[in-house]
Image 1 (cartoon, one colour):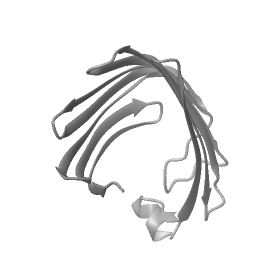
Image 2 (cartoon, rainbow, N blue to C red):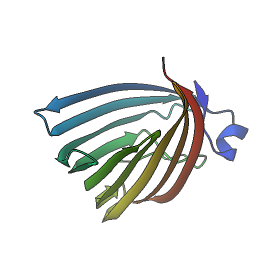
Image 3 (cartoon, one colour):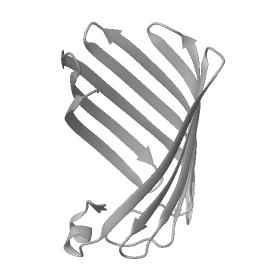
Length: 168
């Protein structure tokens, strides 16, 4: 359970529960697939359903370079003024991904480009990029930094986060 992260939604005390199913598979030695299905249940009775997936072919192993396809479909019951909720969103993109490890540093960079549409909006060019870094401080203790930008139908978004993580 978490609050919806806009000032207007926090003022109205709108909270949400996210339920996600994730599946990943390797097809042969060079092809990976991922499929995620999610359901978001909010206090204001605005539920969202979404499915996204990617199919990635690794053109090179070290450092890893992958090329593939990405798709995302999402829909909500309504479009509230307090926060963004996807309405009849369809997004289809080509993608590239680069992964490398240098000593204690892991880096993953992704770029996606294609077309997207939403309710009452025509197809338009949409793209996104992300850089995720992970640095091992000590044994299984990591510092993680994540920076991304998304420009799609209905909004543009910068996202930045950092964390301290441990593996068991």
